[in-house]
Image (cartoon, rainbow, N blue to C red; front, side):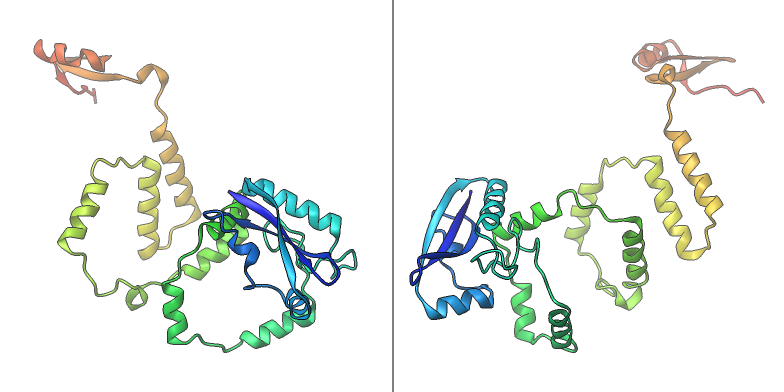
Length: 269
């Protein structure tokens, strides 16, 4: 469950920050933490002591976000000359309403140019585990978000040929027998639709041939036609005997086989 808190400076008894957190074992860790605070928050804390007040607890994350947005709007943000809060966003998800000047953007860009992480930083990043609170924030932020066709095309073009040959992390490696068995067990019984088969076929063709738009269209139409089964044909099959054939229901097949019929159809050329 989530909670909403506020920080109050003791020299003026004025609220200067509104925040939310994810409540783990009722310790309200984020509310009492001094880490990852903005410089304006730190300036106040360096001048005076402050108290923490838990406004609401044991509420859903969505409710906490809504309350945070409401309170920030009521007290007002100092950077917008609308109140006393040092919050740099409108609340809700951490970045809504954040205003960065061109100068700030330029400084961030210059500071990060050519910067390389140390081996220790890389290892720490690999071993990093996101908290439940962070995972929930990311999940809420990404819900309903859709990439435009232009963005999808940019991502596709960027990844093409990126992991080909020795650039592929698996280059020169082989699956162990145990891994092969796991992959086989997971794939066994999986039925691919005709559309999926066509996509795989098209992908393999593009690796060695130039596939025209006309070919792609034909494969797409072919896939759609094969997946269409007339309602009257569902659950039926053809059987043949001597020079005759007929269509029957699948559940009648066994009894006809006992009478000498075989599955199939005679096509007159």
